[in-house]
Length: 403
Image (cartoon, rainbow, N blue to C red; front, top):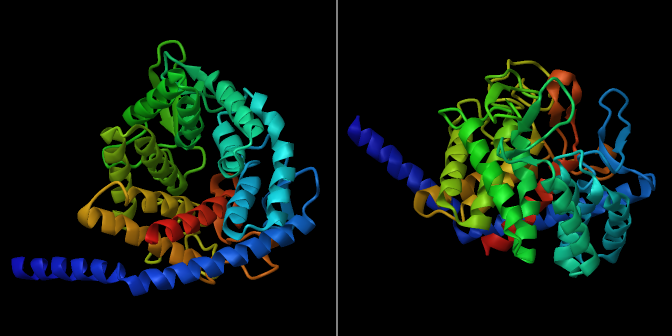
């Protein structure tokens, strides 16, 4: 038995090495190029079909019609953010013009103090805009946004408040890890350590209270705003309070990988690895590595093109792929290889006809088969604007880092 186990370990190692050969990377870079060119074409079609005053959100799975959002919806920044990524790849000024046009719709949200999602809304859009143009006006938009987001921090709780609605007094959701990058960026460019302090405190508190012993995370933790005590741990979009909602696990993975990049605090790297290992070791992870919508979800028949009867969430796969590719750069040895290979496999699956739309279909979104909130029967088995964003980001990261 020991000899067999050793043989299996050797075989797994050899398979990992083979997967890293130059020929494999060349093949994947070619696939990434093909997919990015397709994505740019899809979004140029979307530009023609999208009303001037709104942002794309999803597809109505009953009527098949495009679902749009106003600037104050949490996904508002993903469409212009994706356009900036596609402009970065293609250098096509048509995409840049559309990104600027849609950013102008979102800009007023820099003063919005009623949402924790300003990182999603403003950093994904104006963050990419500033990175690619160095326009000082974009920098001011981002700094104002960071100040607005900071007003939602309660030092007694140690977290940024997520929602102002619902039955909770002070709810914090795992998604909020994604909004911290706006604050770390603001601290870096202004040398104002208060932004970084909020980001680190939030990340530390979330690490303490959101995660179970197996490093899966709860979706919502409700706090007492006066004492900072945890009142309850629940879900809002997952299958159950005790379940591992797949996109929530991906948000955590991405968030702690990002926090390690920004701080070099090894606790965040360790946390990211623990979350990655929970995801990749999960017995209900499908062979193509595109997660089902909740790792503990009951089986139901939804995705007709999938051999797995439980709905997949391509958005969870896209977020996780982007995070795993980055995480692989911060660790060494077999762990690095494993995370890279997993991110690569996720991208390969998402680039396949199982998840990638056909030209001119899917309301001009790039990916199919995402799940917004199955318990609310909202955005189930449809395209989602944030799935596209993190997919394009992951493709660009792959091309840059594979070399």
